[in-house]
Length: 167
Image (cartoon, rainbow, N blue to C red; front, side, top):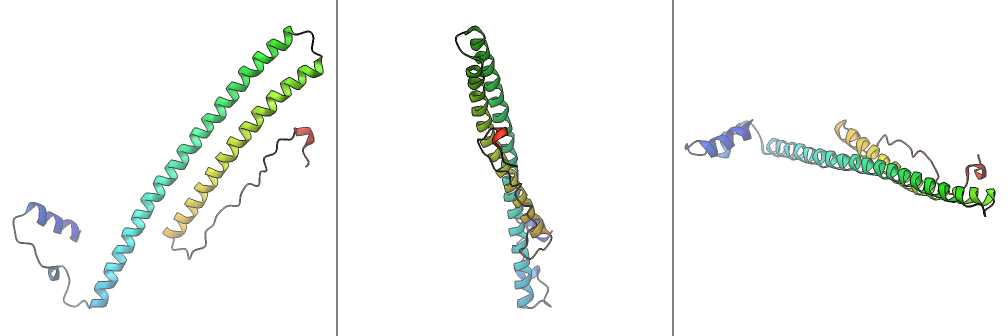
């Protein structure tokens, strides 16, 4: 409020600018002035950090949306590939059924691998967002450097067939 009044006087009023002692009570000591200035600076740093964190969180959410779109696009491409492949295999009588199934399986495995890579990127973004939220909560809540960061989901991406997976 004092800063606002000071800026208003400075910009819109033709009265002389008051001295800095006008704003400071004569009862305050130098240490009180320094402490007030430090707490003001701390508040400004926190405000700046919260703006930066909000921007980073928004960017992570945007990245997740783009990754979701990339997954959807890959699934659509897979559908087109499979349709074309099955149409080709239906007209090709020279291949055995097992060879046709192998071609379909290869196409599926490639798509699954691509989607798993994108999904892993998406999970990393979600974990980054969780870390950012935990740090923000700790900073706002007066935490002493300990963050309540959720553990990784522990998903390991492999290229094995589901029948080959070890449980």
